[in-house]
Every structure is written in structure tokens, then in C-alpha cells.
Image (cartoon, rainbow, N blue to C red; front, top):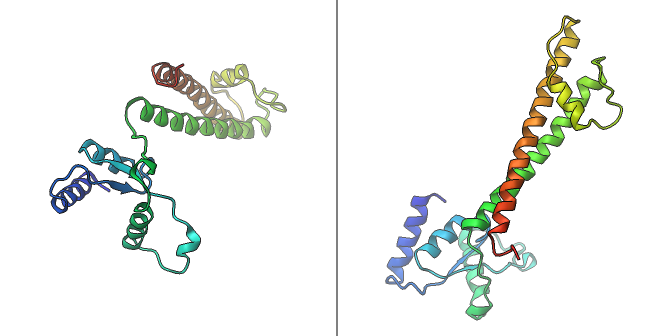
Amino acid sequence: MTSSGINRAISWVARRTEGNADTLWIIEGAATYGAILAGTVAAHGFPVSEAPRMIKKQNSGVGKTDVLDAHRMAMASLPLPVDKLRHPRLNEGIRQGLRILVTARSSMAKDRTRSVNALYAPIRSNGLGIDARKKLIGSQIAEISRWRDREEELSLRIARSEAVRLAKHVLDLDQQLAAKEHQLDELVQVSVAAP
């Protein structure tokens, strides 16, 4: 949902509730894909709750539309006292920063693993002077990243060039991962989780 769509939704609710700020919003995925909507609604002073989990078996064969889902969520929420509803943690400040950094770190770690695995191909299948029968260590990757072009057969030149590119990428990711770890440490130290 775009910001203009969110603002239209808030205006629509305000018109129908005569601006009553006690109007409870039940939002599905309030801590994930509905986080922007939940945060904006909360910033406008409305209370926000995560939609109750729906039992799939009850709705089997009944059909699925946004209108039906909204009705089912509202009906599932009605019998619950307000203090028993799940109130989401809004994606603000340190918490949101940590979530972004953890996701970025995970993505970079996977990219690093893929790059190291790809680096084995030109090293193991060509005589480039590195023994890669065992796991490559950091000093070997650094050595590969410093290789220069040589007068050698075409396929060896291409293999060497690709190995250098991959090694440099791995080293760059190592630096980025270290920076992300440092940022994460700093945020944890100033968060409520620090103790």
C-alpha cells in the first residue's frame, strides 16, 4: 500500500468514526508486511492490534477475498477483550535498525558463501598455483585477489581473472560484514536488550 493509499484509508476511517481516536485498527501482518500501515495508523493516534491467526480448516472451501478476510478477522477479534489482543511492536528506531541490519548481514553472508564456492571452480579446474583441495583460508583468498595478469594460455588468463574478481568480492564482503557486526553491536548496546 502506498503512502497516499494509507492516508486515504485513515481519512476514510476518520470520516466514518467522526474522528474518534479510540477506533481500534486490526491489521494482518502488523509487524511484517503491514508494518508501514500499522506505524502510520499508530502515529495518527489510533490503537493498533495484530489480527488473530485464522484457522485454515474453518475457511476451507469458503473462498478467499480481502472483504471476506477482513470480516473473518473482525469476527475473530470481537470476543477478545482489548487487553488480550496482540499489540505489535512498531518498527521504529533501534528495533527497526536491528531488523534491517540482521537481514542485510544474512544476505551478505549468503553472497559470501556463494562467491567462495564459485571461487573453487577456476582454482580447482586450472593450474593457477593454489592448492584448493581443502577449504580456502583468508590468506589464500587475499593472495588470489592480488594476482596480476600473466602471459599464459587464454583459458588460464580467463580463469585467473575470474578468480581475482571473486576473491576481491569475498574480501569486500568481509569488510562489509565486519562493519554490519560493528553497527549491530552498537545498536544492541543502546537498546533495551543491553542488560
